[in-house]
Amino acid sequence: NQLTGPNYIDWKRNLDIVLTAESYKYVLTEACPDVPAYNSLDEEKHEYARWKKADEMAKCYILASMSNVLQHQHQSMATAADMLLNLKELFGHQSRAARQEALSALMNTRMAEGTPIREHALKVMAQLNELEVLGGFIDGETQVDIMLQSLPKSFDQFRLNYNMHKMHMVLPELLSELQSAEALFTQKSVVMVAKQAGPSRPPKGRKRKKAAGKAKAQSTQLVPQQAVEKKPKGRCHKCNKSGHWKVDCALIKKGKEGNSHTFV
Image (cartoon, rainbow, N blue to C red):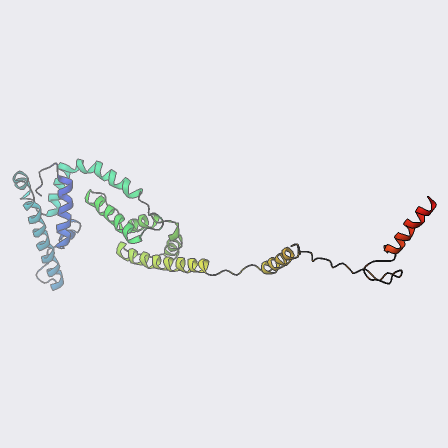
């Protein structure tokens, strides 16, 4: 992916990846150590030689990924940082609009409640890296603040503890702590759900009330009436026979009928 001009943003992103992987990127932000004297410590001599070697390698990567015209313009420059500064002046206007867009996306990123913290944190870290590639520098402490402010309300206690104890972390350490906090939140939510789903005892008095209502319902049911046995009639004192009373005796009735004929 050679740099031709219009592809400056993509080229710069790929260059950062290569220099970071090879541990040469630090020469772009750290100044060259002073040339050690003859009687300097071996550690100072080693540090100087290490920086010069890394800078030469970074320059080679930069020049090898340019078009021929750009190579001729930059091959005589002293350091890799000088090369990138000149390239930024030539093509940096492309990255300004992209940097503003990346910054807006970063500030509007919010973690949705219930989503994995790792997924969200990696997204924010990628946005921060994109912004850095485009020339927007954000210090480490501010990066952590941006990450904390993008978390949902379930992490309010974590954010409060972080600020109260004046903790200081880099983003990878913060991600590890956030994952531990997420695991605790998950365990608590599982316990609460288990308690709510357990068998519930009926309120006191409900069973007694239900039994009383059942007894009342049974008492209101109609009981079929049994047939009433008729008492047998007594013995007649006129004819001395059973089955009728004296009033109903046939002899008395016959006598009354005979008397009525006599008067007629």
